[in-house]
Length: 513
Image (cartoon, rainbow, N blue to C red; front, side):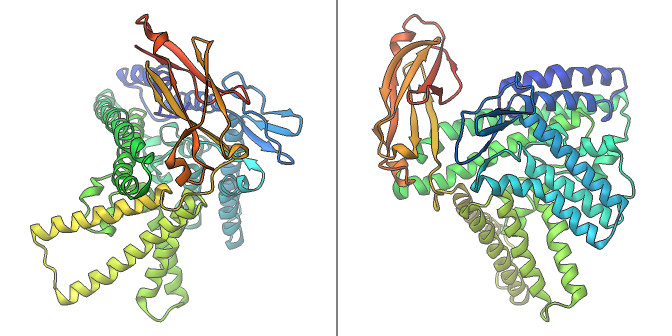
Protein backbone atom coordinates (compact mmCIF):
# COMPACT_ATOMS: atom_id res chain seq x y z
CA UNK A 1 0.00 0.00 0.00
CA UNK A 2 1.67 3.20 -1.23
CA UNK A 3 0.62 6.46 0.47
CA UNK A 4 -1.92 8.46 -1.56
CA UNK A 5 -1.65 6.04 -4.50
CA UNK A 6 -4.66 3.78 -4.01
CA UNK A 7 -8.09 3.86 -2.39
CA UNK A 8 -7.10 1.33 0.26
CA UNK A 9 -4.72 3.88 1.75
CA UNK A 10 -7.43 6.53 1.92
CA UNK A 11 -9.71 4.04 3.68
CA UNK A 12 -7.01 3.30 6.27
CA UNK A 13 -6.28 7.03 6.56
CA UNK A 14 -9.93 7.87 7.20
CA UNK A 15 -10.41 5.10 9.76
CA UNK A 16 -7.20 5.35 11.80
CA UNK A 17 -6.15 9.00 11.40
CA UNK A 18 -8.76 11.42 10.10
CA UNK A 19 -11.76 10.24 12.10
CA UNK A 20 -10.10 10.22 15.57
CA UNK A 21 -8.39 13.57 14.90
CA UNK A 22 -11.66 15.16 13.78
CA UNK A 23 -13.41 13.97 16.94
CA UNK A 24 -10.63 15.42 19.11
CA UNK A 25 -10.63 18.63 17.08
CA UNK A 26 -14.35 19.19 17.52
CA UNK A 27 -13.84 18.71 21.25
CA UNK A 28 -11.06 21.32 21.21
CA UNK A 29 -8.38 18.80 22.14
CA UNK A 30 -6.57 18.33 18.81
CA UNK A 31 -2.78 18.54 18.76
CA UNK A 32 0.08 17.04 16.79
CA UNK A 33 1.10 14.98 19.82
CA UNK A 34 -2.32 13.35 20.07
CA UNK A 35 -2.13 12.62 16.34
CA UNK A 36 1.04 10.63 16.99
CA UNK A 37 -0.89 7.43 17.74
CA UNK A 38 -2.80 7.78 14.46
CA UNK A 39 0.52 8.19 12.65
CA UNK A 40 1.94 5.02 14.19
CA UNK A 41 -1.14 2.97 13.23
CA UNK A 42 -1.12 4.26 9.65
CA UNK A 43 2.64 3.69 9.28
CA UNK A 44 2.16 0.12 10.47
CA UNK A 45 -0.42 -0.55 7.77
CA UNK A 46 1.67 1.14 5.07
CA UNK A 47 4.80 -0.90 5.73
CA UNK A 48 3.15 -4.20 6.64
CA UNK A 49 1.26 -4.21 3.34
CA UNK A 50 4.37 -4.06 1.14
CA UNK A 51 6.00 -7.12 -0.31
CA UNK A 52 9.13 -8.32 1.41
CA UNK A 53 12.62 -7.45 0.27
CA UNK A 54 14.92 -10.25 -0.78
CA UNK A 55 18.61 -10.75 -0.06
CA UNK A 56 19.93 -13.05 -2.75
CA UNK A 57 22.80 -15.38 -2.01
CA UNK A 58 24.92 -16.89 -4.77
CA UNK A 59 22.75 -15.19 -7.38
CA UNK A 60 19.58 -17.09 -6.44
CA UNK A 61 16.26 -15.29 -6.19
CA UNK A 62 12.92 -16.53 -4.90
CA UNK A 63 9.50 -15.03 -5.62
CA UNK A 64 8.66 -12.16 -3.32
CA UNK A 65 6.09 -12.71 -0.64
CA UNK A 66 4.49 -10.36 1.81
CA UNK A 67 1.33 -8.63 2.90
CA UNK A 68 -0.28 -7.99 6.26
CA UNK A 69 0.13 -11.63 7.22
CA UNK A 70 3.95 -11.38 7.12
CA UNK A 71 4.67 -11.12 10.85
CA UNK A 72 8.24 -12.38 11.16
CA UNK A 73 11.18 -10.00 10.72
CA UNK A 74 12.61 -12.35 8.10
CA UNK A 75 12.09 -15.74 6.52
CA UNK A 76 14.81 -18.06 5.24
CA UNK A 77 14.09 -20.00 2.07
CA UNK A 78 17.05 -22.12 1.01
CA UNK A 79 19.70 -19.60 0.02
CA UNK A 80 17.49 -16.50 0.13
CA UNK A 81 16.51 -14.36 3.09
CA UNK A 82 13.33 -12.31 2.83
CA UNK A 83 12.93 -9.27 5.08
CA UNK A 84 9.63 -7.72 6.16
CA UNK A 85 9.71 -3.98 5.29
CA UNK A 86 8.00 -3.09 8.59
CA UNK A 87 11.01 -4.40 10.53
CA UNK A 88 13.43 -2.71 8.13
CA UNK A 89 11.55 0.50 8.87
CA UNK A 90 11.81 -0.03 12.64
CA UNK A 91 15.52 -0.82 12.40
CA UNK A 92 16.07 2.35 10.37
CA UNK A 93 14.14 4.37 12.96
CA UNK A 94 16.35 3.06 15.78
CA UNK A 95 19.47 3.63 13.67
CA UNK A 96 18.71 7.28 12.83
CA UNK A 97 17.46 8.18 16.32
CA UNK A 98 20.47 6.55 17.99
CA UNK A 99 22.84 8.40 15.63
CA UNK A 100 21.29 11.76 16.54
CA UNK A 101 21.37 11.05 20.29
CA UNK A 102 24.97 9.81 20.28
CA UNK A 103 26.11 12.89 18.36
CA UNK A 104 24.18 15.19 20.74
CA UNK A 105 25.85 13.48 23.72
CA UNK A 106 29.41 13.49 22.34
CA UNK A 107 29.74 16.50 20.05
CA UNK A 108 33.06 16.85 18.28
CA UNK A 109 34.36 17.39 14.78
CA UNK A 110 35.12 13.70 14.38
CA UNK A 111 31.70 12.70 15.71
CA UNK A 112 30.05 15.15 13.29
CA UNK A 113 31.56 13.38 10.30
CA UNK A 114 30.78 10.02 11.86
CA UNK A 115 27.13 11.06 12.37
CA UNK A 116 26.88 12.21 8.74
CA UNK A 117 28.30 8.90 7.57
CA UNK A 118 26.02 6.83 9.79
CA UNK A 119 22.93 8.82 8.75
CA UNK A 120 23.77 8.32 5.08
CA UNK A 121 24.69 4.64 5.42
CA UNK A 122 21.15 3.16 5.03
CA UNK A 123 20.48 5.33 1.97
CA UNK A 124 23.74 4.39 0.27
CA UNK A 125 23.18 0.72 1.11
CA UNK A 126 19.74 0.78 -0.49
CA UNK A 127 21.04 2.62 -3.56
CA UNK A 128 24.36 0.85 -4.11
CA UNK A 129 23.95 -2.72 -2.89
CA UNK A 130 21.29 -3.68 -5.47
CA UNK A 131 24.06 -3.40 -8.05
CA UNK A 132 25.83 -6.28 -6.32
CA UNK A 133 23.60 -8.79 -4.55
CA UNK A 134 20.78 -7.11 -2.64
CA UNK A 135 17.35 -6.11 -3.90
CA UNK A 136 15.96 -3.42 -1.56
CA UNK A 137 16.84 -5.42 1.55
CA UNK A 138 18.33 -2.31 3.20
CA UNK A 139 15.73 0.23 2.15
CA UNK A 140 12.06 1.06 2.34
CA UNK A 141 9.63 3.44 0.74
CA UNK A 142 10.77 7.00 1.47
CA UNK A 143 14.24 6.25 2.81
CA UNK A 144 15.69 9.19 0.85
CA UNK A 145 13.38 11.68 2.53
CA UNK A 146 13.90 10.18 5.98
CA UNK A 147 17.67 10.44 5.48
CA UNK A 148 17.51 14.13 4.58
CA UNK A 149 15.37 14.85 7.65
CA UNK A 150 17.87 12.97 9.82
CA UNK A 151 20.70 14.98 8.31
CA UNK A 152 18.85 18.19 9.12
CA UNK A 153 18.89 17.14 12.79
CA UNK A 154 22.62 16.35 12.63
CA UNK A 155 23.42 19.70 11.00
CA UNK A 156 21.28 21.55 13.55
CA UNK A 157 23.05 19.84 16.45
CA UNK A 158 26.41 20.72 14.90
CA UNK A 159 25.36 24.37 14.54
CA UNK A 160 24.21 24.50 18.16
CA UNK A 161 20.60 25.15 17.15
CA UNK A 162 19.37 21.91 18.73
CA UNK A 163 20.48 21.43 22.33
CA UNK A 164 18.06 18.68 23.36
CA UNK A 165 15.97 15.99 21.67
CA UNK A 166 12.57 14.61 22.60
CA UNK A 167 12.24 10.91 21.61
CA UNK A 168 8.61 11.25 20.56
CA UNK A 169 9.16 14.44 18.60
CA UNK A 170 12.29 13.08 16.89
CA UNK A 171 10.56 9.88 15.79
CA UNK A 172 7.47 11.79 14.65
CA UNK A 173 9.64 14.22 12.68
CA UNK A 174 11.64 11.53 10.91
CA UNK A 175 8.66 9.28 10.13
CA UNK A 176 5.68 11.63 9.90
CA UNK A 177 3.43 9.42 7.78
CA UNK A 178 1.91 12.00 5.35
CA UNK A 179 5.42 12.94 4.19
CA UNK A 180 7.40 9.76 4.83
CA UNK A 181 7.40 8.38 1.28
CA UNK A 182 7.87 11.44 -0.96
CA UNK A 183 8.21 14.55 1.19
CA UNK A 184 8.00 17.51 1.48
CA UNK A 185 11.16 17.71 3.59
CA UNK A 186 10.44 19.57 6.82
CA UNK A 187 12.91 21.07 9.31
CA UNK A 188 13.17 19.85 12.90
CA UNK A 189 12.93 23.29 14.52
CA UNK A 190 9.90 24.30 12.45
CA UNK A 191 8.24 20.92 13.06
CA UNK A 192 8.83 21.30 16.80
CA UNK A 193 6.80 24.52 16.95
CA UNK A 194 3.70 22.72 15.61
CA UNK A 195 4.43 19.62 17.70
CA UNK A 196 4.16 21.55 20.95
CA UNK A 197 1.09 23.57 19.96
CA UNK A 198 -2.39 22.82 21.34
CA UNK A 199 -5.15 23.81 18.89
CA UNK A 200 -8.45 25.36 19.87
CA UNK A 201 -11.68 24.17 18.25
CA UNK A 202 -11.72 27.19 15.90
CA UNK A 203 -8.06 26.67 14.91
CA UNK A 204 -8.85 23.05 14.15
CA UNK A 205 -11.84 24.04 11.99
CA UNK A 206 -9.61 26.48 10.06
CA UNK A 207 -7.05 23.71 9.55
CA UNK A 208 -9.81 21.30 8.51
CA UNK A 209 -11.04 23.76 5.87
CA UNK A 210 -7.50 24.15 4.53
CA UNK A 211 -6.95 20.36 4.57
CA UNK A 212 -10.16 19.62 2.61
CA UNK A 213 -9.23 22.16 -0.08
CA UNK A 214 -5.73 20.70 -0.47
CA UNK A 215 -6.98 17.13 -0.52
CA UNK A 216 -9.50 18.01 -3.25
CA UNK A 217 -6.68 19.64 -5.23
CA UNK A 218 -4.67 16.46 -4.80
CA UNK A 219 -7.49 14.35 -6.23
CA UNK A 220 -7.82 16.73 -9.18
CA UNK A 221 -4.09 16.76 -9.93
CA UNK A 222 -3.16 13.13 -9.29
CA UNK A 223 -6.22 11.04 -10.07
CA UNK A 224 -7.73 13.13 -12.88
CA UNK A 225 -5.23 15.35 -14.71
CA UNK A 226 -2.10 13.19 -14.20
CA UNK A 227 -4.06 9.99 -14.91
CA UNK A 228 -5.48 11.43 -18.16
CA UNK A 229 -2.04 12.64 -19.28
CA UNK A 230 -0.54 9.24 -18.51
CA UNK A 231 -3.28 7.31 -20.29
CA UNK A 232 -3.78 9.45 -23.39
CA UNK A 233 -0.37 11.06 -23.88
CA UNK A 234 2.55 9.61 -21.93
CA UNK A 235 1.81 5.88 -22.32
CA UNK A 236 1.12 6.08 -26.10
CA UNK A 237 4.20 8.26 -26.61
CA UNK A 238 6.33 5.85 -24.59
CA UNK A 239 5.35 3.20 -27.13
CA UNK A 240 6.15 5.47 -30.09
CA UNK A 241 9.76 4.96 -31.21
CA UNK A 242 11.93 7.58 -32.86
CA UNK A 243 11.96 11.37 -32.75
CA UNK A 244 8.18 11.87 -32.60
CA UNK A 245 7.80 9.71 -29.50
CA UNK A 246 10.83 11.27 -27.80
CA UNK A 247 9.84 14.86 -28.63
CA UNK A 248 6.25 14.36 -27.52
CA UNK A 249 7.32 12.56 -24.37
CA UNK A 250 9.45 15.54 -23.38
CA UNK A 251 6.28 17.57 -22.81
CA UNK A 252 3.89 14.83 -21.69
CA UNK A 253 6.32 13.47 -19.10
CA UNK A 254 7.02 16.99 -17.76
CA UNK A 255 3.32 17.70 -17.29
CA UNK A 256 2.61 14.24 -15.91
CA UNK A 257 5.46 14.47 -13.39
CA UNK A 258 4.29 17.88 -12.19
CA UNK A 259 0.62 16.99 -11.70
CA UNK A 260 1.42 13.60 -10.16
CA UNK A 261 4.03 14.98 -7.75
CA UNK A 262 2.12 18.20 -7.01
CA UNK A 263 -0.98 16.08 -6.37
CA UNK A 264 0.91 13.94 -3.88
CA UNK A 265 2.35 17.05 -2.22
CA UNK A 266 -1.15 18.55 -1.93
CA UNK A 267 -2.30 15.38 -0.15
CA UNK A 268 0.73 15.47 2.15
CA UNK A 269 0.33 19.16 3.02
CA UNK A 270 -3.43 18.79 3.54
CA UNK A 271 -3.25 15.70 5.79
CA UNK A 272 -0.35 17.25 7.70
CA UNK A 273 -2.42 20.34 8.45
CA UNK A 274 -5.30 18.13 9.62
CA UNK A 275 -2.89 16.49 12.07
CA UNK A 276 -1.61 19.86 13.28
CA UNK A 277 1.63 20.10 11.30
CA UNK A 278 2.13 22.95 8.83
CA UNK A 279 4.29 21.04 6.36
CA UNK A 280 6.02 23.45 3.93
CA UNK A 281 4.78 23.79 0.37
CA UNK A 282 6.59 22.01 -2.44
CA UNK A 283 5.41 23.87 -5.57
CA UNK A 284 4.69 27.48 -6.47
CA UNK A 285 3.62 27.72 -10.14
CA UNK A 286 7.01 26.42 -11.40
CA UNK A 287 6.13 26.74 -15.09
CA UNK A 288 5.75 30.51 -14.67
CA UNK A 289 9.43 30.78 -13.70
CA UNK A 290 11.32 33.38 -15.72
CA UNK A 291 14.73 31.73 -15.39
CA UNK A 292 16.26 28.50 -14.15
CA UNK A 293 17.14 29.94 -10.75
CA UNK A 294 13.54 31.08 -10.32
CA UNK A 295 12.38 27.60 -11.37
CA UNK A 296 14.32 25.93 -8.56
CA UNK A 297 12.81 28.39 -6.09
CA UNK A 298 9.38 27.11 -7.21
CA UNK A 299 9.92 23.39 -8.00
CA UNK A 300 10.29 20.81 -5.21
CA UNK A 301 10.95 23.72 -2.89
CA UNK A 302 11.61 21.71 0.25
CA UNK A 303 14.43 19.77 -1.46
CA UNK A 304 15.79 22.88 -3.23
CA UNK A 305 15.96 24.91 -0.01
CA UNK A 306 17.40 21.97 1.95
CA UNK A 307 20.23 21.59 -0.57
CA UNK A 308 20.77 25.36 -0.67
CA UNK A 309 21.07 25.66 3.10
CA UNK A 310 22.94 22.47 3.96
CA UNK A 311 25.15 21.97 0.91
CA UNK A 312 25.62 25.09 -1.20
CA UNK A 313 25.82 27.66 1.59
CA UNK A 314 28.03 25.46 3.79
CA UNK A 315 30.41 24.84 0.91
CA UNK A 316 30.67 28.56 0.17
CA UNK A 317 31.21 29.36 3.85
CA UNK A 318 33.95 26.73 4.17
CA UNK A 319 35.61 27.99 0.97
CA UNK A 320 35.55 31.57 2.24
CA UNK A 321 36.97 30.65 5.65
CA UNK A 322 39.67 28.47 4.15
CA UNK A 323 40.41 30.90 1.29
CA UNK A 324 40.32 28.02 -1.17
CA UNK A 325 39.86 30.14 -4.31
CA UNK A 326 41.07 33.53 -5.48
CA UNK A 327 37.99 34.46 -7.50
CA UNK A 328 34.87 35.13 -5.43
CA UNK A 329 32.59 33.40 -7.94
CA UNK A 330 34.55 30.13 -8.12
CA UNK A 331 33.19 28.77 -4.85
CA UNK A 332 29.64 29.59 -5.93
CA UNK A 333 29.99 27.82 -9.27
CA UNK A 334 31.67 24.75 -7.79
CA UNK A 335 29.10 24.72 -4.99
CA UNK A 336 26.35 24.64 -7.61
CA UNK A 337 27.93 21.59 -9.27
CA UNK A 338 28.26 19.90 -5.88
CA UNK A 339 24.67 20.71 -4.93
CA UNK A 340 23.06 19.51 -8.14
CA UNK A 341 25.41 16.55 -8.33
CA UNK A 342 24.13 15.43 -4.91
CA UNK A 343 20.57 16.03 -6.08
CA UNK A 344 21.13 13.76 -9.09
CA UNK A 345 22.72 10.99 -7.02
CA UNK A 346 19.93 11.35 -4.43
CA UNK A 347 17.48 10.18 -7.09
CA UNK A 348 19.71 7.24 -7.97
CA UNK A 349 23.07 6.21 -9.35
CA UNK A 350 21.82 5.63 -12.90
CA UNK A 351 23.70 7.66 -15.49
CA UNK A 352 20.67 9.71 -16.54
CA UNK A 353 20.15 10.97 -12.97
CA UNK A 354 23.76 12.11 -12.72
CA UNK A 355 23.58 13.85 -16.12
CA UNK A 356 20.30 15.47 -15.05
CA UNK A 357 22.01 16.99 -12.02
CA UNK A 358 24.99 18.23 -14.04
CA UNK A 359 22.65 19.64 -16.71
CA UNK A 360 20.92 21.85 -14.16
CA UNK A 361 24.21 22.86 -12.54
CA UNK A 362 25.44 24.10 -15.93
CA UNK A 363 22.16 25.95 -16.53
CA UNK A 364 22.21 27.69 -13.14
CA UNK A 365 25.87 28.73 -13.53
CA UNK A 366 25.28 29.95 -17.10
CA UNK A 367 22.32 31.98 -15.94
CA UNK A 368 24.45 33.54 -13.19
CA UNK A 369 27.05 34.59 -15.78
CA UNK A 370 24.28 35.98 -18.00
CA UNK A 371 22.65 37.86 -15.10
CA UNK A 372 25.96 39.48 -14.16
CA UNK A 373 26.58 40.49 -17.79
CA UNK A 374 23.07 41.88 -18.24
CA UNK A 375 23.30 43.82 -14.99
CA UNK A 376 26.33 45.65 -16.39
CA UNK A 377 25.17 46.10 -19.99
CA UNK A 378 21.37 46.34 -19.45
CA UNK A 379 20.90 44.82 -22.93
CA UNK A 380 17.68 43.03 -21.99
CA UNK A 381 15.08 45.13 -20.20
CA UNK A 382 12.23 43.94 -18.01
CA UNK A 383 9.15 44.26 -20.25
CA UNK A 384 5.95 42.15 -20.32
CA UNK A 385 6.96 40.66 -23.69
CA UNK A 386 10.45 39.74 -22.47
CA UNK A 387 9.01 38.19 -19.31
CA UNK A 388 6.78 35.84 -21.32
CA UNK A 389 9.63 34.98 -23.69
CA UNK A 390 11.77 34.17 -20.66
CA UNK A 391 9.01 31.91 -19.25
CA UNK A 392 8.69 30.10 -22.58
CA UNK A 393 12.44 29.53 -22.89
CA UNK A 394 12.68 28.37 -19.27
CA UNK A 395 9.84 25.90 -19.71
CA UNK A 396 11.53 24.30 -22.73
CA UNK A 397 14.93 23.90 -21.09
CA UNK A 398 13.20 22.46 -18.01
CA UNK A 399 11.20 20.04 -20.19
CA UNK A 400 14.40 18.86 -21.87
CA UNK A 401 15.86 18.27 -18.40
CA UNK A 402 12.82 16.17 -17.49
CA UNK A 403 13.40 14.14 -20.65
CA UNK A 404 16.92 13.42 -19.41
CA UNK A 405 15.51 12.57 -15.98
CA UNK A 406 13.02 10.10 -17.50
CA UNK A 407 15.89 8.02 -18.88
CA UNK A 408 14.48 7.95 -22.39
CA UNK A 409 17.50 9.67 -23.92
CA UNK A 410 19.92 7.44 -22.01
CA UNK A 411 18.00 4.23 -21.32
CA UNK A 412 19.51 2.12 -18.55
CA UNK A 413 20.42 -1.52 -19.25
CA UNK A 414 17.27 -3.67 -19.28
CA UNK A 415 16.49 -5.36 -15.96
CA UNK A 416 16.56 -9.11 -15.48
CA UNK A 417 12.78 -9.13 -15.76
CA UNK A 418 9.94 -6.66 -16.19
CA UNK A 419 6.20 -7.08 -16.59
CA UNK A 420 3.54 -4.47 -17.24
CA UNK A 421 -0.17 -4.51 -17.97
CA UNK A 422 -0.88 -1.32 -19.92
CA UNK A 423 -4.55 -1.75 -20.79
CA UNK A 424 -7.37 -3.12 -18.65
CA UNK A 425 -10.76 -3.04 -20.35
CA UNK A 426 -13.80 -5.33 -20.81
CA UNK A 427 -12.69 -5.89 -24.39
CA UNK A 428 -8.91 -6.40 -24.19
CA UNK A 429 -6.02 -6.59 -21.77
CA UNK A 430 -2.55 -5.89 -23.11
CA UNK A 431 0.99 -5.27 -21.98
CA UNK A 432 4.38 -6.93 -22.16
CA UNK A 433 6.60 -9.41 -20.31
CA UNK A 434 10.38 -9.43 -20.51
CA UNK A 435 12.93 -11.92 -19.27
CA UNK A 436 16.62 -11.52 -20.00
CA UNK A 437 16.91 -15.27 -20.56
CA UNK A 438 14.12 -14.98 -23.20
CA UNK A 439 15.53 -11.96 -25.03
CA UNK A 440 14.02 -13.11 -28.34
CA UNK A 441 10.58 -13.94 -26.96
CA UNK A 442 8.94 -17.30 -26.38
CA UNK A 443 6.99 -16.42 -23.22
CA UNK A 444 3.27 -16.93 -22.69
CA UNK A 445 0.66 -15.57 -20.29
CA UNK A 446 -2.50 -17.11 -18.84
CA UNK A 447 -5.63 -15.03 -18.40
CA UNK A 448 -7.89 -15.80 -15.44
CA UNK A 449 -11.42 -14.40 -15.13
CA UNK A 450 -12.97 -14.65 -11.66
CA UNK A 451 -10.06 -16.96 -10.65
CA UNK A 452 -10.94 -19.40 -13.49
CA UNK A 453 -8.53 -20.02 -16.35
CA UNK A 454 -9.83 -18.37 -19.51
CA UNK A 455 -7.11 -18.51 -22.17
CA UNK A 456 -3.40 -18.63 -22.93
CA UNK A 457 -1.80 -16.11 -25.29
CA UNK A 458 1.80 -15.76 -26.51
CA UNK A 459 3.79 -12.65 -25.61
CA UNK A 460 5.21 -12.18 -29.09
CA UNK A 461 3.72 -8.93 -30.41
CA UNK A 462 6.38 -6.70 -31.95
CA UNK A 463 7.02 -3.63 -29.77
CA UNK A 464 9.47 -1.20 -31.43
CA UNK A 465 9.56 0.86 -28.23
CA UNK A 466 10.91 -2.14 -26.31
CA UNK A 467 13.48 -2.84 -29.00
CA UNK A 468 14.58 0.81 -28.79
CA UNK A 469 15.09 0.29 -25.05
CA UNK A 470 17.31 -2.75 -25.81
CA UNK A 471 14.73 -5.31 -24.68
CA UNK A 472 16.01 -8.01 -27.00
CA UNK A 473 14.22 -8.19 -30.34
CA UNK A 474 11.26 -6.25 -28.94
CA UNK A 475 8.75 -9.07 -29.52
CA UNK A 476 7.43 -9.25 -25.97
CA UNK A 477 3.96 -7.72 -26.15
CA UNK A 478 0.71 -9.58 -25.51
CA UNK A 479 -2.94 -8.80 -26.23
CA UNK A 480 -5.95 -10.87 -25.18
CA UNK A 481 -9.58 -10.46 -26.25
CA UNK A 482 -11.68 -10.97 -23.12
CA UNK A 483 -14.95 -9.50 -24.44
CA UNK A 484 -16.85 -12.84 -24.40
CA UNK A 485 -16.65 -12.89 -20.58
CA UNK A 486 -18.32 -9.48 -20.31
CA UNK A 487 -21.34 -10.15 -22.49
CA UNK A 488 -23.42 -10.76 -19.35
CA UNK A 489 -23.13 -7.07 -18.46
CA UNK A 490 -21.52 -7.78 -15.07
CA UNK A 491 -18.16 -6.88 -13.53
CA UNK A 492 -15.44 -9.52 -13.42
CA UNK A 493 -12.04 -9.90 -11.77
CA UNK A 494 -9.19 -10.40 -14.24
CA UNK A 495 -5.71 -11.70 -13.42
CA UNK A 496 -2.75 -12.30 -15.73
CA UNK A 497 -0.08 -14.87 -14.90
CA UNK A 498 3.24 -15.67 -16.53
CA UNK A 499 3.09 -19.30 -17.63
CA UNK A 500 6.73 -20.14 -16.94
CA UNK A 501 6.52 -19.09 -13.26
CA UNK A 502 2.75 -19.19 -12.63
CA UNK A 503 3.17 -15.83 -10.89
CA UNK A 504 0.77 -12.90 -11.45
CA UNK A 505 2.41 -10.08 -13.40
CA UNK A 506 0.05 -7.55 -11.78
CA UNK A 507 -2.59 -7.47 -9.09
CA UNK A 508 -5.97 -8.82 -10.18
CA UNK A 509 -8.27 -6.04 -11.31
CA UNK A 510 -12.03 -5.69 -11.09
CA UNK A 511 -13.26 -4.55 -14.51
CA UNK A 512 -16.72 -3.10 -15.06
CA UNK A 513 -18.45 -3.67 -18.43
